[in-house]
Structure formats: structure tokens, C-alpha cells
Image (cartoon, rainbow, N blue to C red):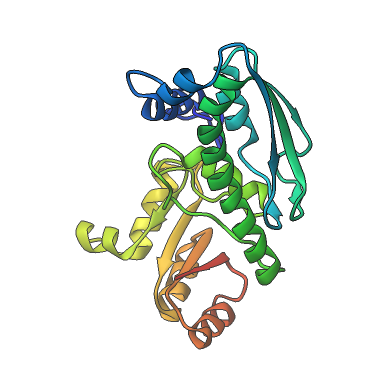
Length: 247
């Protein structure tokens, strides 16, 4: 994550270690796990097994492992890796070690695993429903969690789209309206000034999709079209650009 997450190139951002540090600081506060320290004997050891309650896809293991590394003495034996299908009641991992540390780490481990696995599992359902079309992700991610959530999409069989604003040109109607520009001119300028990037155009009407194809766009985003207009746009573009649909 951070340096080498999904996307075409390394990019700045919170590292996995920084995210885990923030998550633990949020949970432990200034005094730490006061309940476990008060009630559980320091010498007591424990063992916990992570079990899948429902069918799904595992994701987030690296984050969970990073949490566990912060607690000396905790050791995990994993039965599944990111991308593995989970059956109800199936074992994910067994964690053993000092009981206080086990109780303190538990919630942060589960928060990472459940959220990220939930994204992977839902993605897997859409991948099956939408086949043979690919399922793409978006930039509508939890701030700071983008690399993790996009990895979850990939674990669920989805396809990572844009990691950020800098890895492709995506021309929307707002850009054209605010720039006072024409579509063909915007595509031509993108080709000239950023020759290494994919040029994509958002179209909310089949006619705009045709104009984007004629302007030489690599991709065309068919935005908020009903089924009939999608069919019209696909037929009108006629394979001259790669198409995606959203909304």
C-alpha cells in the first residue's frame, strides 16, 4: 500500500503501517486496554479462532497480520489467504499468545478483516452477476483506505480502474462546461500533452458517445443510461472505443 498499491505507478499515501498505527491509537487511547489489564492475569495465555459466519471471500489478511505484529507473543496460523472463498463455519486463522494482548488486538484485527472481506465478497457477487462484463471499481473509497479497498475488489475478482486523478484523463461534462471547451479539442489536447495516458470521455447520451469515439477517445463511460440507451450507444460506437457503464 502507499508505495506500490493498485494503479499504474507508485503513489503517495498512507502506508499500511501508518493505517494500522492510526487504528490502534484510535482504539487504545492514552491508557490502553484498561479492562484487560485490570482483570486478566499477566501470565494468562489464550487462543482464538477466526471463523467465517457466512460464505464470502477473504481480504485484508496483510492488514490483520500488521496489527498482530504490534503485539509481541501473538502468533497466527492462517488457513486462508486473500482471494480465497470462505464457507460458513470455515476457519480463517488461529491466534494464540498472551491473553491480554489477544483481547486488545482482537477488535482492530476484526475491523480490518470484516470490512475488507465484505468489499471482496460483495464484489464477487457482482462479478458472477455481470459476467462476461468486467466489474470496475471507482474513486468513491474511504479516505486513506483506497489501496486496501481496491485490493479487496481485486480479491473478489473485480478490476481496478483509476487509483487517482493522475493515472488517466477522464473528461466529464463538468470539465467541458467550466473550461468552455469542445470535446474534440479536449481529447486532442489530452493526446498532445499527456501522450502516455489513457483518454476517457464520460457520455450521458448515445450521441455524445459517438462524438467521443469520433474524437479518438480510448474509453467511453456511458453514464446513467437506461438499458435502451445503453444498447443504442454500444451499437453506435461500433467497437471504436472500450465502453464502461455506471450509474
